[in-house]
Length: 265
Image (cartoon, rainbow, N blue to C red; front, top):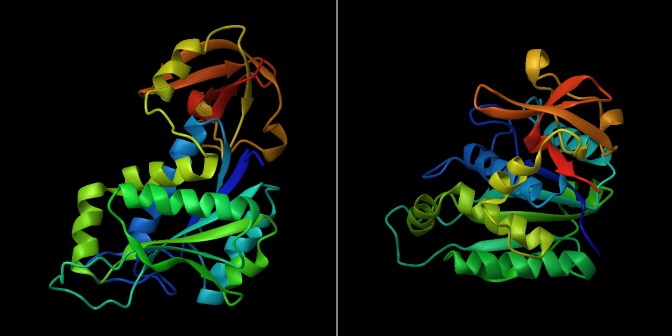
């Protein structure tokens, strides 16, 4: 199965709000959002259409979960990914042992098994050893039971473990996000992709708009309607707007940042 459209979100409400994530040496809600953004960035570099389904306005834990699933289920994707940090080690001094990485799913088969195994392998390469058997099966997590697409939940490391904290700070959210993105697509993602793509955006090139795209130009930041996504368009001009490369789309007569465009033949 080729994964072409993915939902990604950081778990819980934002830090210091009701239903936020665990907070200790690391702040789960802050860090899971950094990792989710990195996953999204690298998936887009790989040409995958990505939707950020992170929620920031939940009124309770259950409400956060309902809103996340509602956002996920409206996109018609191939795969759903939830990013979390774990807690429960209570090791603030460091015992030279890592709490570790784990993956949660209702079952591990098919593409879920493939992505999970690649994720465990990739995270090992970064130093994040498995937390026991890293493949955690459950029917108790609301998110895994209520998303339409196949879903995995990643627990990156423990917020209350000094050894995990030090490894996380040394590694950084960007490398972790890249590692998970590569697990999802099943191949390495070159960090130079953006520069290579930028050089081929020119007048006459055919493109499609992907992900949670927003307009550039005078309408910068305004969300592009979903009805305009994944259709073939033609670039007529390219410009740089506040250090952001944008392409003028002929059929829409609008500027769109090239990070939301993929070349089509």
